[in-house]
Image (cartoon, rainbow, N blue to C red; front, side, top):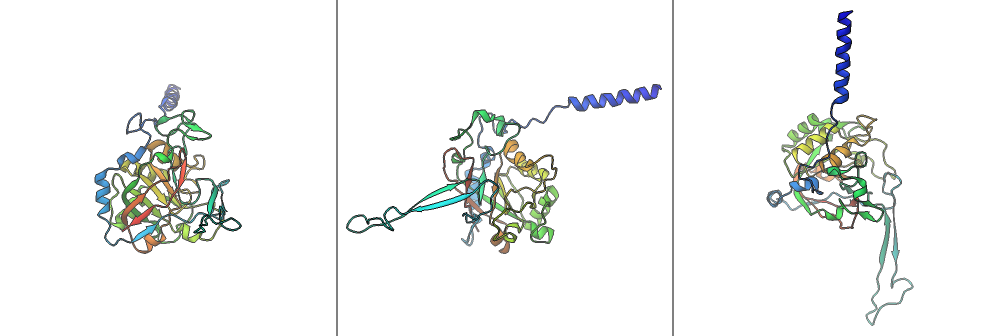
Length: 312
């Protein structure tokens, strides 16, 4: 009985120990209490200058897809455009030179097509990057902090990790996670070492395989939580893929939806690039390139429709 009593006491102590274990403290930025830019702090003029030396042929690659009415989007997101015939059509030409023209009106969610997720996109229990509470920056007329209009130009080294080559199949099957082992193996195969200030993009073959679809696939291969934290610890500025959510779906843990988004955006301030066009880069065997992105300066926007450019 004495032995059983000791076992019970030990079990109780273990339970108390687990219960009292402090929760993960993810709210403090490594870049300081006032930081609102996250991993973009890892960009430097020296990094940009070194990345520019990767340009040897001058060939450019558009990493953004065309966004239109039929672009697959995470519901209820949608896109629509109306062309306004200001002086064309039935309008009267202007002046003796008979000038005519058109304008356009776009009604769209900004998180559609090729996009960057800003740090105000997803948080944990109403707190976002650097512990900022939703009440401190979200208004119906725009974000007062973390707006993507505040992002400086991103000009740095881009790395393409071809996961179709790693797994030997294209597209990589839905629900396949990329974690440390897969990332390191793909980087070794590409002959690159991931460094602070880089932008890392995964090629999965998913976008090419879904070409022509007007609805999103319910699943996709993608980054796992371990892999996301690993890349964040390496100091990357952004992570992207030729998929609509970057992370593997079904999620690694169905009880923790979009955990990669939370790991990158909320916990580490690393930006997410979704729906990147990667098939031409992969077909050309490009593994590193000069990456450049100027984010549209729409004041207070959570996300932005983008067209980054890769130059080799």
